[in-house]
Image (cartoon, rainbow, N blue to C red; front, side, top):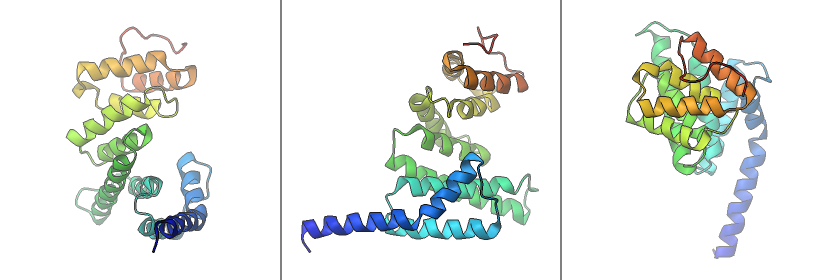
Length: 208
């Protein structure tokens, strides 16, 4: 098989994968932004299977890893505060482990994309794994995404949840991010800080 034929096959395979996952990706996007469709276990399972099948065809597709990570993390959060040691708690931890693995793969494929790093940090936070990998993900998300209005509240909320343990440089970086943010995300972040009784040095107003 020649190089041209291999390239053609790769192109056809990628196109087929994109087409075959349109519904699954639309479902994930709807759940991610809160626009629907309504969640059912059957729809979740069907969406999961579609994306897992697509990933087998294109294993280096970072977006499929991100979407699968979202499905796992969202289902884990949907189980609520499961009692430690219960079957629901074990299932929750397993789902978060799978989410972390998918986000880790996506970060390796898109190392400068801030949202993927933020998703990895959030999944590890939910898993209560505040280890070196968590801080690496957090720092990369902050480095590449500090000016992303849609990402700033997530970064701030993660930081505020761990504020007493943050190094001064990280506290200063978060404070600067809040101070320089646009009006809407700035107000959101200040509200988040207020709920946790966190005073950000030099910031007293939601106005830019």
